[in-house]
Amino acid sequence: MKKIVAFGASSSSNSINKRLATYAAQQVQNSNVVILDLNNFEMPIYSEDYERLSGIPKEAYDFKEIIKETDGIIISFAEHNGAYTAAFKNIFDWISRIERVVWYNKPMFLMATSDGSKGASSVLQIAYNRISGGNPNHIPCFSLPNFSDNFDQQAGIKNKDLNKKFIDALSIFTDSL
Image 1 (cartoon, rainbow, N blue to C red):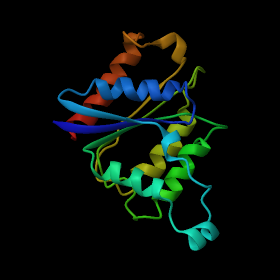
Image 2 (cartoon, helix red, strand yellow; image 1 turned 180 degrees about the horizontal axis):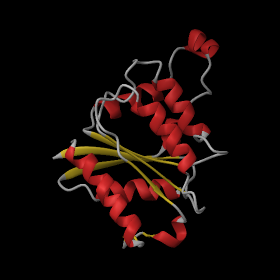
Image 3 (cartoon, one colour; image 1 turned 180 degrees about the vertical axis):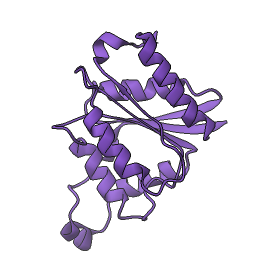
Image 4 (cartoon, one colour; image 1 turned 90 degrees about the horizontal axis):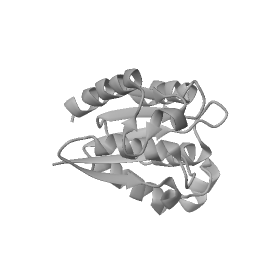
């Protein structure tokens, strides 16, 4: 049984990206799914000065250990002003200080959603460009526009064309596990 870690790259308690990441992870057959909440990994804002004086926070090591022990990672990115949320960026900054290969070259599935027509595609492109560098796996991406119109917690992705794109991307991810 494969272990899948999924999370919405947001600190919102009502994160639509966490809902999408959870849904995607639940579609992976024969898997043990772990859903992370970024609020459980709150740390001081990364700075070289803080690191020099206090070291790397325990929460960064905890997050990194979870990533190390998984077979695959699903992230759905929330978009704040066209980029990562501060919560995700801070965790990313801290865990990158532990080891150079941040995501252990694990198979990944990157997604983004918003209630807008672009589906947070700007942050998804930024994330893909940063995360795919050096990862030997093909990393599939999926953007879901107009989340409230196109997603139902029970039925999943309601739009047939978008659902096909989702299934195709998810298949690439599951084939690499």
